[in-house]
Amino acid sequence: METLSAYWSQAELVANGIIILHLIGALGLGILMGYERSYHGRAAGMRTYGLVCLASAALTVVVGYPALWYGGTGPSAGVAAAGDPTRVIQGIVTGIGFLGAGVIMREGFSIRGLSTAASIWTAAAVGVTIGLGFYGAAVGAAVLTILVMSGFRRLESALPHQTVMQMTIVFLREKAPSAEAIRAKAREHGYDITDWAFHLQTDGGRFEYQITLQANGSPDPMQLINQLAVADAVVEFRLSPSRI
Image (cartoon, rainbow, N blue to C red; front, side):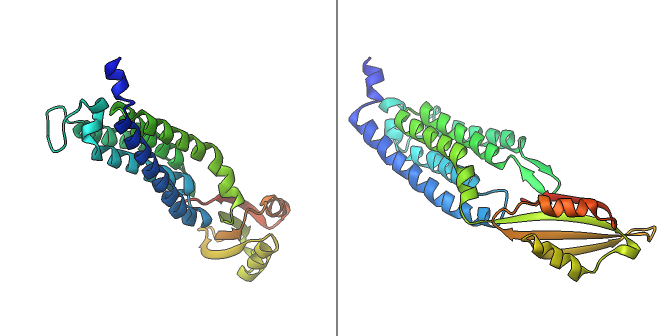
């Protein structure tokens, strides 16, 4: 019981409180930096930046309290003992990096799984914090992670942001509209065209536009899709979100 109570001593509780304050500050700054990316419709947004910043802070700040590791029974400050947990932490961080990379997938112009990868890395940081005996800080980090993963998707959608879409349209060459006509049609549905690419297919019978669409907020693309689907001149089209 004496060993267990050491994990909840006054010194340990004070250290846990300070660590939690570090984590909250790191999460807040990460979210602030991530909002800039989220606003511009990028894949790595508030959740990814916030979790990476939180995990980095957790793995860094616990190293500053070596006298309190394992309830005060760990190696003393400045001693590079054979059981120095920082060596283990390095291996964990490297290994989890490979695991996180495995859940990141590219689908067309979108990259998915960044928030999941960041949450896996944060879970490793929480595990390290528990392993060193900072239970209060680990619980706080886990709660913050759950709040970010469960609530911030809706918050990102509610905050002012931009939507970026990639559209490919193939027309019969003789019926292909002008670039200005396509730009005007996109604006009717709330989109601005920010980039163009053109492709005349080898048989010469089809002309392809590759377009980057950008809009403030999240306009419904279904009206644009419905118009393209019934247009006689349209041979083929593809519309997909672009989050890179």
